[in-house]
Length: 474
Ligand SMILES: [Fe+2]
Ligand SMILES: [Fe+2]
Image (cartoon, rainbow, N blue to C red; front, side, top):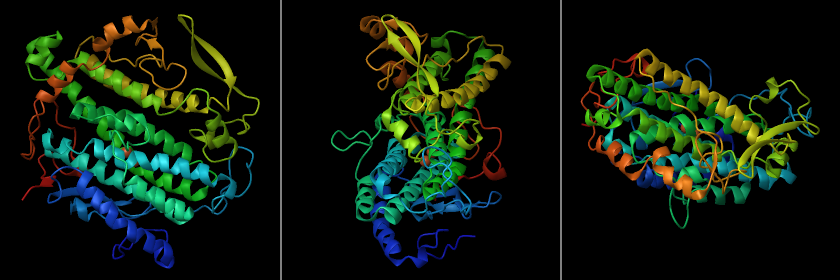
């Protein structure tokens, strides 16, 4: 069990490293200022039924109870050390995993940690207004849970910066609190984390698609030869699972509700569906197209010498690296990537090392497809023929081989004009967003009540009933 009497709960023996403890205690007030400014709007006095990480044991790692969010105990937890762990890939394969940062990889590792760390507060900033228009107390509690855990993930990365990167690390930790999502002068590092999350449909799509990018990045870093990074990321994944659950079930519940209304009133076309106060399936597809395309950009360029060197030097592995049956060096291996040639999309085989971003993106897309298949079962069971589909990988891309090309969701290479003419058919238009937001003008906070556009979940949080008071307003 973690000792919660300490100022910063941890399982890293913080009390024995005075310099580090003082650095973190210095950073903590700055973090709290950030939380008060950029954390969930008008939430500071609320009592929220939250889970708090209290140990790293697989069973019983968290406890549930009412917490005012500014009093949430953001702690530092690493998966326990395996003394026999080795570097499992690249040129250092077979050496003992590093417990300190190798000098020659210092700046690269710092960059990797900062880039991951930057996404955590960014999503809190993106979601900060959504509590004001929540569809239920259950959902309000869930978004707050996601937000406090993203805050903890920031702590996790800041711990690594303070503990292993000295003065540069401390400066980076401060800068993580200074950038702002969507800010013109000092934006967050990655594109998708500067997009607004203006409504709950966008929030569920974000937690399904973009938190899952987080999962795949964390999985790749959990393979790192730098052991403290690997162990930190392993534990973060425990929490990440809940964020993706919120996204997947949120979309399921919207689809469920829409299908119920379509069946009950025997309506099919989008405007009739909208008139009944639920979100039409065409709009669901457009949001999916948008969130999928901006999220797969996060994996980076299809051909990347950085990705190759991260791998070769043992800093960042593949998804489930140690379960893959090959030489874990990839010097002579190839991997297929797509590119545009004239008005066609062709497959080219390139060095597997430079294609590692693409490989991680493909692993991600395979998992995403599973979720979309589960969503489609809802329509199938309702006897509705509409199916959600993932757009082509090249659709609406700003990074990699498809950047600067105009690809339809079906994978046709178009002119810019033809593409722009269809844009509002493929992605949420201003009118679509306005409609979705018109359903979410106030918050629903009566215990057990849900907005008309979303079905209740199958069960409550931590076996509590659906009408449990998940947030107390007092
Ligand atoms: Fe996170
Ligand atoms: Fe997350």
